[in-house]
Length: 505
Ligand code: ADP
Image 1: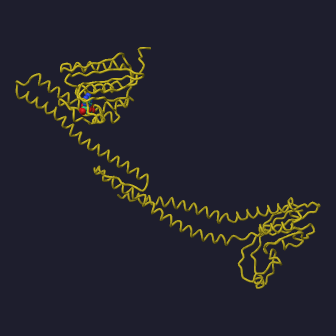
Image 2: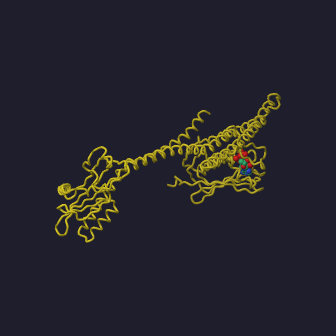
């Protein structure tokens, strides 16, 4: 009980664990991309924008409408642009942000950028850091003057108070040759808007999402485990009922295909168990009855012979012997069948003369039954070899002949016929008995089945003979069957694959 409780909790926690792992994985990815890599992505995209804008400008440097191209590019890409000649004179330009630095460059600074670009093969790219911006009024209060990288003179002053983050500018300088042989310096300036505040917002959002997701995962785990566990628990309850021997237990497990399939299988198993149970009870009743009859006879006759001197006759001894034989036949059948079913008896196929073997069996049985007026005939045109388990096959033949003898008509005749067709040898055992009603035909091969209608001469059978025949034949891949006509008799037949006659070669 305790172990089961632990397992139920485990299922719940396991589902929660997997869901939580999934949620955490997702959140980690979100954190990574939204927070850790956000700035890097932002910078990479800005760099790409600035370089492609510069390429565009360089290609169209001699275009008549260069100024409007500069304006368009600056506006669409949010990049400030300034184009100066070698003397430091402005040719074109557009400032999109007061934070752009290039428009505040004096001649000295411009010369410096020329120099760097020239030294680096025409392009100089640099991210310029600026200390936090201070508002003019703050600066005044602190009595400090604008240091390097301060706001350019043309930057509008904001009257309201803003907390600035450290500002960075990506400045890209490129020397471009014009058609007339002169050279110009392209300066592009993109402000890296600080992402700190965005990240902070995202962080708070992500924390909220994380908490929410964990709670949702927990709730989901509870709901899922409950929904998964409850049909299993129902099945378990029914299984316990079944274990107590209530074979009419019905397993009802719906909701999921797997559970429905499991309950179908369990219902089937319960049905089969029920059948086995009733068979077992029937078998015990049958066998104890069947065993009791010969035993009573044996002990009865033995007592008579002991107590009454005149009864000590050979006929009475014969009755005791007959009954003892019937007993031993019964026990042998039961043993054979259980051996076959348990798989203890494996097939040991050998190549042997099938016809010869049938002939020998017929002779042996004929000798035993002749005195009682039985006549057994065997017809075969040629000797046929087969590859089969000789002992098990002879058991089949014995059983069929025995049945035929038991159920044959008043003429007490049984005939066996061997016929041959391409690749197969067929043996048919025919009797002249009452036959088997059609309704019973499918059942006679079942274990413990004994037809009620045609039990004759108080013969004791185990009801296992034909089950043994069927099992052995099926193991050999043989075909088999029975044809029966009421009042005329039955023909039991089987067909085995032929083997080559080794004596022919
Ligand atoms: P049993 O030991 O009772 O003969 P079998 O398995 O050999 O058991 O046969 C099952 C039933 O099939 C028998 O009880 C009998 O009713 C029927 N049966 C078998 N062989 C014949 C036959 N040759 N003629 C008529 N009925 C037969």
